[in-house]
Length: 102
Image (cartoon, rainbow, N blue to C red; front, side, top):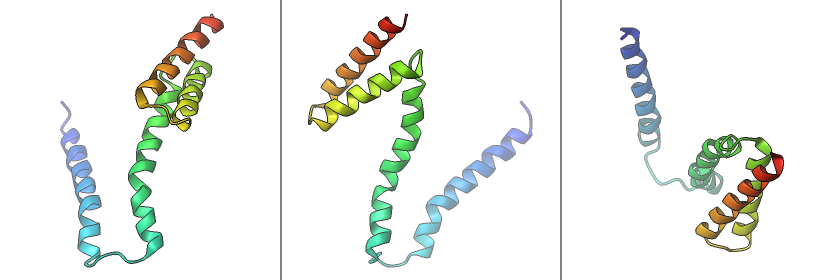
């Protein structure tokens, strides 16, 4: 194991700790600005979306079948269906698309 790996680990830990510590150290009271509050409210959702969406497009054999699965899941979820139904629709769309491609 290379010795510089420990430096990388400590730097990553320090940066992660600072990111979590700085808001508590800089902001003493309640945030009253509506724009800042709404921005902070949506940060977890945007972060999850940014991490998940590229994985959705590369999870199957082709981008076309992945896009079909994503479209099916999006359509069923916008129609008010459950997560289970959306997942089933996405799986079916990917399966059928992969069958048609080959």
